[in-house]
Amino acid sequence: MSASQLLVLASGSPRRLELLQQVGIEPDRLMPADIDETPQKSEHPRSLAKRLAKGKAEVAARRLRELDYGPATVLGADTVVSVGRQVMPKPALAEDAVANLRTLSGRTHRVYTGVCVIGPTGALRQRLIETRVRFKRLSRLDIQSYVASDEWRGKAGGYAIQGLAGGFVLRLVGSYTNVVGLPLAETLALLNGEGYDIHARWRAPEVDLPPDAESGEDEEKAVLP
Image (spheres, one colour):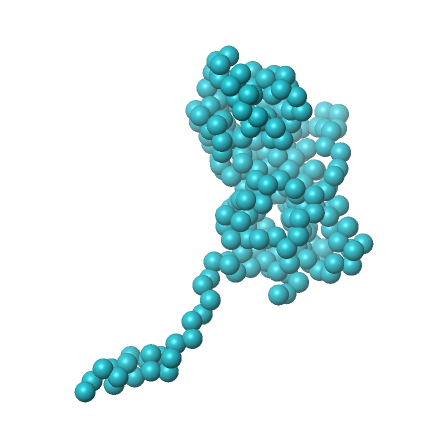
């Protein structure tokens, strides 16, 4: 395998891993980057997502150099949910999840995912993807039941669109996989731009045919008396 085909995912998110696996990509190594995700003063949510994605990729790339891992492609991403300029936090407690859902209820919010790829040569490519999502007006029972399900834990904005909260969505404009945690089309384009063969696992292995089946002429001779 060439160096450009070694992929390191700078994330511990099971959802990002599952999305990559969905399109036939299996990272060679997972290297979650622990960085401070606190927004800077007056920082726009889109800028935050882009900065954190780049920061995670750079931390992982630096670790790889320290470990003498060799050339590899590093993929970092970060997802931010916002209402206007207000960043919806990743809730730590049930009451935080309740507050998030009350804010999102009956409103349109935006989901930004920054994606950063650092290639084997150190070249850096970035994209920022935005999706608009509108929730129905949530009842007290909707909120209480969802919080009781525990699906909100560890989720940007406090919900998982691929789970029970999919029933809250009235309208979505943009990339669905972006809301799950990784915009696939744009991520594949970035990886492809750095020479990573995104179709490697799509292709079935070549089958060696016996000599008498390699051409129609030989096959015809085999069946004639």
